[in-house]
Length: 150
Image (cartoon, rainbow, N blue to C red):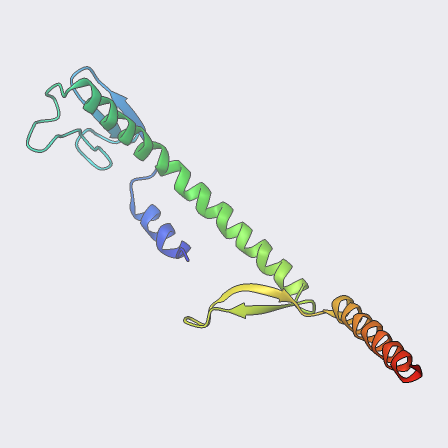
C-alpha cells in the first residue's frame, strides 16, 4: 500500500509547483516560474556525456521532451492524486465502519492485512440450504414409504 505521508513529505521537499516544460531550440528543460535558471527544479536535457545544448536525434529528442513534460505535469498531479486518494480512503473507511455489522474482513494469511471481506449475514443462503435439505428429506421419506408398500 502506498505511504501517502511519504509522498506528501517528498512533494513538500521539492520546489513548489507548478513546473513548466520548456522546449528551447537548443535545449529542453523543466523550470518553476520565478525560479532562477540552474536552481531546482531545472532539469536540463542530457544524453550520456553529450551536453544538453547539443541537438539530439529527433526521435530521442521527442522521448526526452515527453519525459520532461510528464515530470513537469507530475509536480501538480501527484499532490492532487494524493489528496484524492486520501479522501477516497477516508470515505471507504467510513463505509467499512458503517457496514461493520454486515461484513467481516478477510485477512491475508501471510501478512494479516485485510484483503477483502465477506457478508456475515448469510441468512438468505442458510434458509435456501435448509429448504433444499428439507425437500431432499421429504423426497427420501416418500421414496422409503413407497418402498415399504411394495
